[in-house]
Length: 259
Image (cartoon, rainbow, N blue to C red; front, top):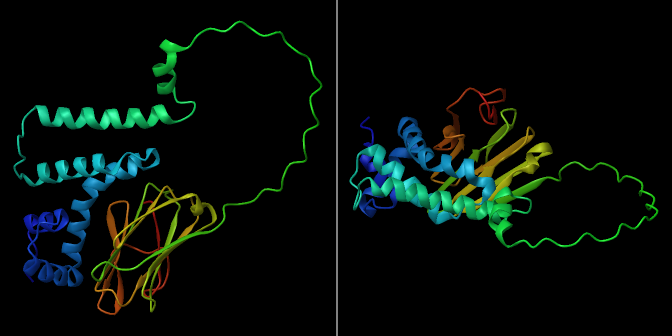
């Protein structure tokens, strides 16, 4: 079997692959686990920044620019106006974006630095001694409520990406007859944040609970990616495990997020 070259995979990621070649590439990826894994590794180079900065909600255009820069540099593709100023400008833009987010967070030291020059000292007010109210009875502890998200495939393609999660997180995967891709987070995993895009679900920062991934059997291609590696892929009418499972069966494998 002839595999897809890295240039073709990068064009596919950048949306630059011609329509007549894209169909053939999609069919090849659905049948070739090696090329699907290589595509996931290339995408991970751009998404690792999103996983690390996901909790800060860095604006998407900054992350996309950074991801494209790293992918093109790794593949040796020329960059318009490339020079020493471009990496420095990218670093400055990303630093300013993170600083801007940090300054907006209550209690952030950055916010204190920015406002320190304009804070006026006020005279101390007289202290009033008052009887402290009785503390209310503590509310019963309630664990995180289950969370779920559902999307339709995009042009027959579905990808579920799990990143920045606890190493003890369990990820259960199965093919379903429904038209949608679904992700359910239970227990401590319900602390995760969900992001969606056409044909894509991202699960960021899940705790050591369980995430259940439903991949539609009707999709042309469907992948589960955990921390930059493809763990499972739909091949025809079956689900293939690409990493060792810790529980479950071939039809419903259970993986652990950590090594």
